[in-house]
Structures are given as structure tokens and as C-alpha cells.
Length: 181
Image (tube, rainbow, N blue to C red; front, side, top):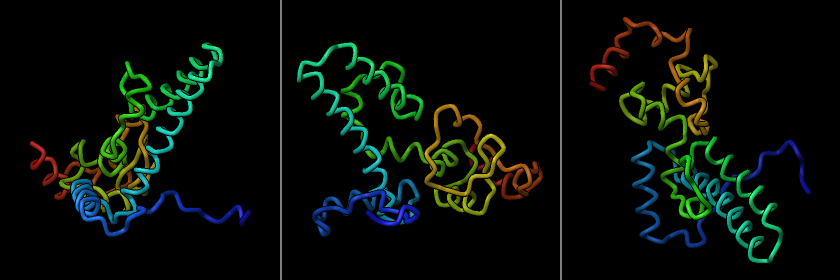
């Protein structure tokens, strides 16, 4: 069984560790999103893999002939959860769940959203600002670059109130806003 307080792996390593095309693709993703290592790509893949598995189980449930009401309830629950998480749009279906890409999972990370909103000049700087405690979600400091931001929290990302970057006269903030224009 194991000790319950021990952290467990949240990802699966690739079956073929030295596959050239996969390594190149992961390297490209790591550079584009400013990731620390390939492990963060694997975590995003595992995160989406769980949703795709749930969608396949729903399709299998429907094909076995169970009642339609149970299937619809479970489908609405899964799709509603993914819409609140920001992975799917408002008119999504099971096919959209099955066609999710790793990039969609990486776009929901706090690091990527800080960069996309113009609070940092690059994904690497966004990671640095987050780990140093300069970024807050709804006024609460968040120091985890891989935090998955829900759709409702997306508009509440800002500089932390006590951070020097929150002041409008800070030199780095001026550089960030000038580059964003």
C-alpha cells in the first residue's frame, strides 16, 4: 500500500526513452512554454490522459446498453468539469474531449497565462515572477508555475499587493508594459 503522506508520481515516463521525434517535439514544447524539464510535459500528458480515459469509459458505457439518463448525467458532469477548468469551450462534446492536445493542457498553467496576459516579457520570466512570489490569483499569492488556472480565476491574475512590481513606478513593470505594446 504505501505511506499516505508520501507524494506519488503524477506522470508516466515514455515507453521508448530515446525516440528522436518525441524528444524533438517535447523540446519544442519545453522551449515554447518555458518549462523547466520534460517532466512537466509528461505531467500535462497524464493530466489529459485521465480525461480521455473517462470519455472512453463513457462511450463504452453507452455501447453496453445502459440507460440514456445515466450516460447523459455522467457526460454532462465530465464536460462541465472540463469547461470550468478551461479545457473545453461552451458547445463541447465527447469528441472534443478525445481530441485534446498537450498544448491545451499547457495553456492552462499559471506560468503561460501570466505571460499571455502581459505580466511578464517571456515564459521564463513569468516562471521567475511566480516562484519569487510576485503573482497573485484573486489577491492570494501563488508560487506554483504549474498551477492549473480555472476559467473563473483567469481574470483575477495580477501582481501580488505587497510585491514591488505592484507599484506603477517600478522599472521592470515599465519595461514589461512597454514591450507588450
